[in-house]
Length: 278
Length: 340
Ligand SMILES: Nc1ncnc2c1ncn2[C@@H]1O[C@H](COP(=O)(O)OP(=O)(O)O)[C@@H](O)[C@H]1O
Ligand SMILES: [Mg+2]
Image 1 (cartoon, each protein chain N blue to C red):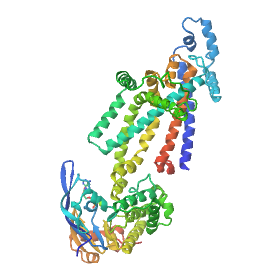
Image 2: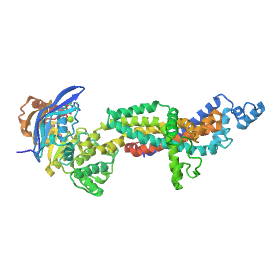
Image 3: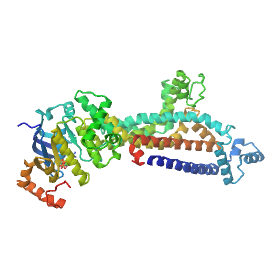
Image 4: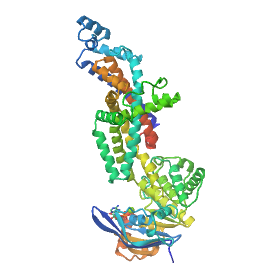
């Protein structure tokens, strides 16, 4: 079966101060269409670098993609021209940013930021719509992320919104142009546990309703359990284990996965595997 | 609301500062050696004549009483009589202020209009040759005294290349009365006199360029630092991930949040612009208030000096208040919380 997104043997180096070290070692993972996949690993294991490589956001240098393929919808993204990659951003694949407090521009209204994203996404897709129609779409998506008062929210500056609301805005931004794949890099980890749980539930509902593919990046096995059906475990730039989510929890194979699972109850103080739902 | 109370506080502070300024200048002007009456009358005047004039000017009274008289005049909007021109200081300042205002305004526009884009260019090509060039220019502009630059430009552009006029605000032959705002650029347009507008602009270029250079360098440096700082923010990376084109990220998403530091410093730089205007007005025979101030200081023309200083002070306060409002417009965080 061919996946919507398939990362094949991806190796990435970073060069800083003349020192080169390898950050990703032959990473492979598949995200089939409509599937919810998790990539889990502790901080520094290379999750964000993987995500950036997929989105085409790695700055080269300092990064260098040594080898590998990133196949999306049958095309190897690494062989595309820059303009072709940019054309996919926000339209074929979108990402949900981790920190809602710092990922929105503080000096423009939500409406301004969202309609600008939409305007250029439309342009890349060869569509056009009036400024008024763009606002209609912005309000529509804001209400889809369960924002109670879309008109008021869109007229606000980020500083006027709570963290949870800003995170919803970031999700709405990712959804504006109906991408087929959503990549969420530790969404909501900057928020309190209750709000984070709401955000995760919202994401899961949105993805299920629309039949999107989701790559959920997290360091929290509880999140994996709640949001995904298949999981890749990453450690020090390597995929050390992959399995159906249920299988991973019932019979983990690698020592690293076992230690991750063992760590969860202690961290959250509960008896279950770090369930984030209150 | 926070912003409004912030502005009100600023206004109240400014009034206090102006009162303080008036006291300091009043004392300094009287402590500096030299007798105004003697200087006005010349070395051949008799001691009696000098004494009479001192009494006329109130210089024989106690300092506190002199200050009270000055403040009393100020509240009536009367700055007294100038010894140098033997006219009311009010009239002198009214005639010269517009020339300085136009010069300084043009200077600020030049400093911002070129400094900010230069800073953007340097930040965009950080550590590449355009950055090096801009940084070199900024340092060069900062260390070049404005009188030197004024003379240099005057000789080069005026006498050698014959590109631009080197003295005054308009050619003598041109008949024009700036009767609405006193600003030639505006009044000439209001009167539909494009010839006057063009000449006024040509006359403004060299003086305002000499005055603007240092501030322009300062603006370029500040904008560069600010843009580099903002370019590392998550929201710029996010804009990239959402497919916002690069030119828009630089000119909109990065520029606006970067704009507050240079804007704020512009207000403070204003004080040194007034200082620099003294020199530049002398070199270019610009009939402005700063040149008037210099001549009156040399004559110990107390009323005129006080008048010039107070008007400059009010001017400074108003410019900074305008900038406070602009900052609130540029950065909504200031408007909403009263700070960044
Ligand atoms: N810009 C960079 N320059 C140098 N090294 C980097 C850079 N970004 C990431 N790395 C390195 O890559 C490794 C993986 O980082 P990252 O993908 O951010 O981890 P994670 O997202 O799993 O917490 C880290 O060891 C980090 O030092
Ligand atoms: Mg990360």
